[in-house]
Length: 323
Image 1: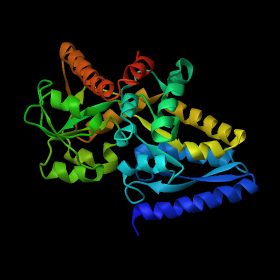
Image 2 (image 1 turned 180 degrees about the vertical axis):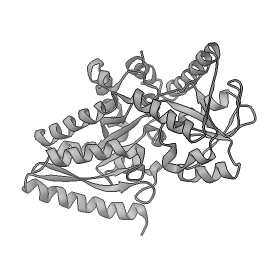
Image 3 (image 1 turned 30 degrees about the horizontal axis):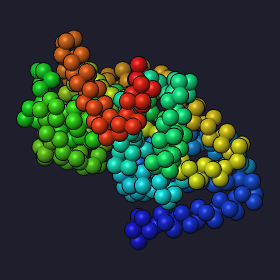
Image 4 (image 1 turned 45 degrees about the horizontal axis):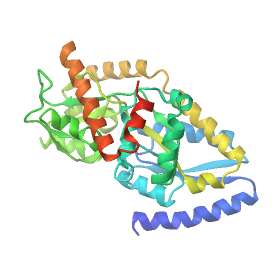
């Protein structure tokens, strides 16, 4: 039985569970993560699930089906949310840009998510996500976390000519603008690609490389970092609309609590860099002028892409999520 068929069957059982639960005044929704259970990118979501299930007893419960490719291919999660095959997902917008090109804007935000709730960004995001993805952006699980370029060989300037790099759409244009060639490789296949010399390096958030043992194939981390890694919790709009006010309140409160887990991330990233250094990963830093140009090019290339793909919403999102 294919993954899609399994989840269609699951969807049917969800409907039954929800209607049965409604009679008992408790609803159960099913959730997946785009990453395996326990993976760094799943951890805050798993804390969120635990909090909802503790605070929501008698009202709402989340049945966590697990994560990663064994549950559902990561790039299918957006479609599954849109179609209502699953109720909730922990996923990055980078995995559903084919459905919602505006989602890349969240990965280049410079305003903490707590500000989104004050300046109208959150409402505007939910307007777009609702119209195009049939989803509500419930909360941001990871925020204020830069991407970095990790390499097997050193460079002396922001010149990537001759380098083959693993990339995803969010920074493909940036790497290519510096002369690199970009290959799309699934995270689980990256270690082998590095080991066999298929790629010379990769873009990755500052944390998470140890989950895939990538430190064994990595020699250098480039400073400065760029962008702002986004992982968010989505809920299908139809599922959301079936909830009563108390159930929505429990989810919203848990989402705000989850977002606040990111408030002290800067210290965490420094500890992560020390761990990388202990594993033998050296730091390559550009001078001030090169660093400024490097970050400016990163920002300009992605915003140009977002605005060209979404003239209606691109510039408005930039105004709302960047300083």
